[in-house]
Length: 178
Image (cartoon, rainbow, N blue to C red; front, side, top):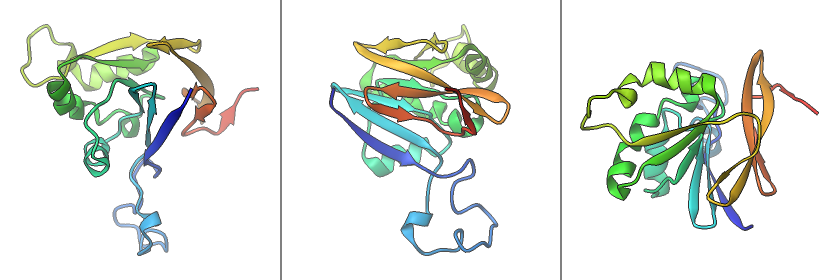
């Protein structure tokens, strides 16, 4: 299994620099100190799998000259990992296919609360078609690609990391079970 990994963002929940911060890093002129919120795109077997879709998603896609997402995996419900969902609209309209999203039930419920119009019976003309898939901490597949969830803790919040082939992606974790 060969794949390419593109880190779209490696910053904190506020990005780097942080608005109003006067620390050495936030005032740095080094381009490595200018980081968008965390997200990664994995290209594997002709598919583009996105892990997390934060508020910087639109800019991350423009900066990377990308226009296709075949699936989205969400690690947890915090807005710095879900707020970019609305920006799937141009990708949906360009490619004219529903975009599968994989998350745990509690994440699905948070998305349903935050993006209620996605779930409306009314045909809202601007919404992307997202196919929600509830997962648990067990292996599932996208096409024929096995995805292995990894349970980690984000303080007291259980979240998922993901393993695809030999690549493991974990964010916002302070504890990984053995």
